[in-house]
Image (cartoon, rainbow, N blue to C red):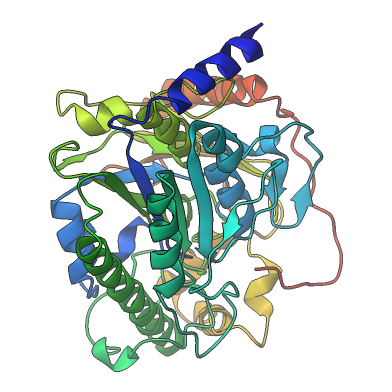
Length: 451
């Protein structure tokens, strides 16, 4: 009955296109919330993204459930959390029949739905149209891009009097970190993230990653120029999402803020007020948001529409908590609230550094080798290395005052009850999503590199 009513509602909405916006969504790659000038990152050179942030609803507490490319994109394009869409990690999938993607939802409403660039996604009945112009292989060097295909796709939709939803999947700042000009960023000056060990390779990696982020920023500038030239701003919502964090320890592949927290900017002049909000949200919230702007309520999704938060500057909250569901390479679950994050590590006896950091072909593995060497001779470096390798079973952080999670409050008696309460709340969230509460020991085997 519910499905029949939803189908009838789709038919009604599809025949009424008044004030229905188009969507242009840009997704970065391996670039977390802490890579931009608008989030007070000193080494950033991101004038276009910073300007967009000033003119948008800016959310810098926007989380992915799993900080890897495939599960993040599955969450984004389906509106479902990993255990419901089936993509648990880059290397872990389970079959979930009947999963719908954003095209399955929007096409019956009269939208053309396409993607240019990195896809890394294959769920749903409908395939997103492939739009030429942006490279699809994030591991490639000497990448170039063009807006010709995107312009034509949008023009064709307009000529057919159809709405459009276009995704642009940038490949920046995914390794190999060889795009952009790293000399724009000082290697000797400035400070590193506080959980990093200061080493030559770490500074080089930060500079190279920042150069890639600068290329991403230049793409945002070009996209805004295209939108202005095509007169899209009046009827098109522009959404920028940064993605998971940098491929460094406690970044990508981890549940820590450096890996799982992103930047979301929503821009629609005269419709979405410019402001900054600390409201919690997730990638799965995007699909129901697009659907509500298109005129329908999304059925049976984990995501929750952000429309009210974006359009009403008197709305200050969205979610009470966020669930992080890492299962590979290490079983770590987390709950994030307005102030705190609790991380539950299933097997703290194992060394929590992934085999990718031992790869001889990855630039981001070089700092890890230096850090291990320094830790043997430097007490402070040894403590940082130990914190990365040996997480406690339960860790509690005030992520507002301690976003790089250096001070584990779980060991303090004053926070014992909060730790216990959040642990129980985390278990409840997991159970609601059908996740097992029994930590699984990751499979052992030869080291393999997975991006």
